[in-house]
Length: 220
Image 1: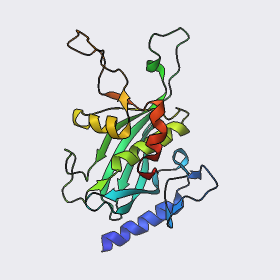
Image 2: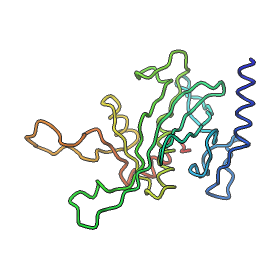
Image 3: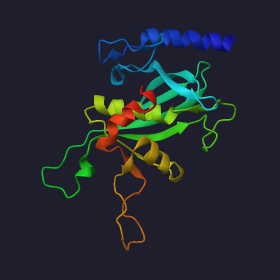
């Protein structure tokens, strides 16, 4: 109980000290709970920045979890999701890549597309993944919410909502079928090459799936 009281005190103090600009004059409260709906995440300092709504894995009931931000390098940030007991439920690292096309014409404009690169995306509560931490209650939508945070940061950084990541083989169908991502370099039909010159698991969010991603499971 003492540990829980200490955590709540720290969370309250961090929330008061943190400063996040709102992207609209509309309040970002859902049923009295402050969420990231209208928060400019890039303007937030390190620490607690707000809540996200997810679903419990067993009964699909709603649950609100806490989001924390940390700077890990130049244009590199870590976002972690914790429950009210301080347990780490999920996290990701992102790198904002602002790229400038060369002055000469290039054969591959995708090489110079500004984007946010997502790395180390984890849902530690999902028992079907190798990152599962024993004892955590299964929470759905963790990966979706983290990708929506990455997409928000991409918009804020003037990267036009572009996000990329390298998928693990077992996760690729989820990224493609649920999130709507596609290969940056899709396989060449009827190719006689027995190997790929570029990573086939490098995925991006195409323009027509950017808005659906932002609204998936109710959005941030």
